[in-house]
Amino acid sequence: MNVEAIRKAMSERGFSQARLARRLGVNRSTVNRWLTGERTLDPSAAATVATLLGVELGDAPTHEPTVRTVRELRQRVADLEAAFEERSAECERLRREMADLSARHEALRAGITRLAELGR
Image (tube, one colour):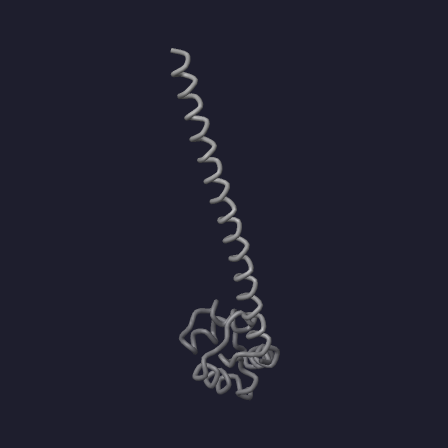
C-alpha cells in the first residue's frame, strides 16, 4: 500500500479527506482510516480512488491481506490463547481453594456444634 502516493495525489488534485469521502459516498473518518492504514479499501473503492486521483491501482490500499497483517493476527490469537490458559488455570486454582475453604468451614461448623452440645 502506498499511502504517500495517495496523499500526494489528493494534495495535487485539491482533494481533502472530506471531498474524497463525498465522492466515494463514505464518511471522512473512513478515508482517514484508509490513509492511516487502520482500514483497507474494498476493490471497487480502490478502483474509484485510483480513477479519481489518477494513481495506479497498486497504490491504493485494498483488502488484500499482507504477510505482516496475517503474522500480527496469528500473534494476537496466540497471545489471547495464552491469556485464556492463564485465566483458566487461575480459575481452577480458585475453585480448588474455594472447595478447601468450604470443607474447612464445614469442619469448623461441626466442631462448634459439638462444643455447644458439650456445654449444655
